[in-house]
Length: 301
Image (cartoon, rainbow, N blue to C red):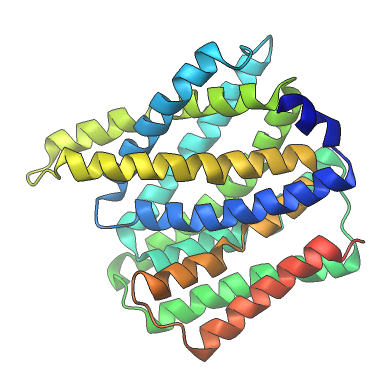
């Protein structure tokens, strides 16, 4: 598997697979966000998910993939620090406002900053049509966030805090996307980086969640919480793992933008599962986001 992936890196076949991986990551990440914001406290949900994906990844990291060598341990440590910042900000934002308010702001900030960062770090260049696509996608996501603010019931007393945290979380998304791309490209075997990332990334939040659980007056039952953790862990592998592999195979900026079509899938989840109303305005904005993604993917050809 590793040999085949490395053989198509930088080829048209690799670019095609990267597109499919990024889109698959978008679907998975929309589901992941809904799971974290679901009926459980977001800190509890995140702790259960992190514990489960750490436990799943550990045997593979120890006995299947090659161990990290040299400076890769430091790269993994840097990834842990960045992802901790992301998760802390995301959990605090979800505490203060609804999923449909927080999620679009986070996802709208990420792609624009990532494309700029990838240009500096990896020397990636976007054509005029691709830049138009980035602006359409990010603009559509932010417009969706504004629409939600006007039409979705939210906690107005904590709204500004939530929006500020969501924006900072979006900056962390851009930072971890760029940094993870650097990390997975630095590893001789991409799966070494992936599985050790999940082991190291899963260490802290279960401890934070357990401490929070012990202080609660009404503690959630562990059974349903861990069931959510298992399902969330599987989705996390698909979401984060797929986009990391996509950034190894092809352009980081394109993968980042395609992944942000997760906002479209999140709206569909809200409509189909959470019984939100989509309506013509949301439908048009979702179409705008999708059109932006198409321009980014094919506008550079």
